[in-house]
Length: 429
Ligand SMILES: *Cc1c(COP(=O)(O)O)cnc(C)c1O
Image (cartoon, rainbow, N blue to C red; front, side):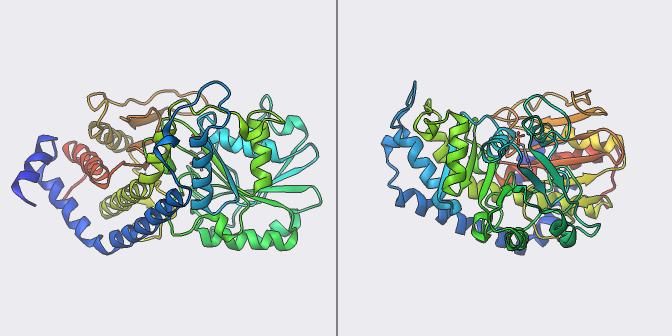
């Protein structure tokens, strides 16, 4: 490493020993990083083609207010999403407040009383429990007479084909498939595996709607789930597709009828997509989407770098150092409270914003133990930016994701290692 670069790392507080350890790991990852770059290149061109084909112009960045009738920027952006993700239509709005909202919207608008929702991949993301009514809540699907069935993955992470076949019935209307493992321990699903599952389900019941919770998965592979038969994909703009620039928002993309249902629910029956002012944020949606393939690639490299560093030091990492990747989340099980806290302090200390604060475990609502969170982000709560969190209890696992650039993800991970090293929690020889 050249002297000038070394000086910069040292100025941030990272020691030569930690840097040397990281450099060795990084050198071995070159071939994998090249593959990630190739995926980013393909996805960059996909987005560029979609922007050009839809004749995006400077006028698309004008802001609308009030009803937002004839908001050309909004409508064109939705066409760009649809083109890129291979859907018939899309709903991409600042009025969709987060990923959970987007998922709730897709479910509530496409299900009717008497229908049944099925998750064939085990328990969905925590926040969906109240949406579905697994944990009773006001306005849940359960309150509207929509039932829920679940088939868990097999212990080896495979699909329970027999179980799925047995549970599909005349009421089954919509199947929800979560691509990312989220904060569970099951494997993340590749787009190809999602394709197999969708084919199997459509063989049994062709008219069932297959929805994919696409959070954290966008642009990690060459294909997206609509290309393998899914009817709807749903995600958050403060994750991958917002590219770090979108300050809010969510999207739903897929079959025209599904999107129309969602639009009628988001605004009102009869109004649908015709209203919804873009309020001046639309330019950041475009630019963020344009950057998203490279931003996602940087975050993926960071996840792989972290897995390789901490696995080498003897910790259990999920996914492991060599597994293929289908989302940007990395878990590290520290089995040690001090190490877990040191890791989070390192991530915080490397942040571009709020780097001087120290994250502390706190009793967050909805959790049965203290939780520690590290994030110093330009957009509050953005998890495409470098961030880490986890419940402070056995096995002291930290979930780590994001990084708007690979270089920043790298420095964050080195800083985490520095904190462990300073406290004699690891040996680097
Ligand atoms: C983040 C996430 C959600 C929820 O998104 P929020 O924006 O936090 O509401 C849902 N599903 C998965 C798999 C996620 O990663």
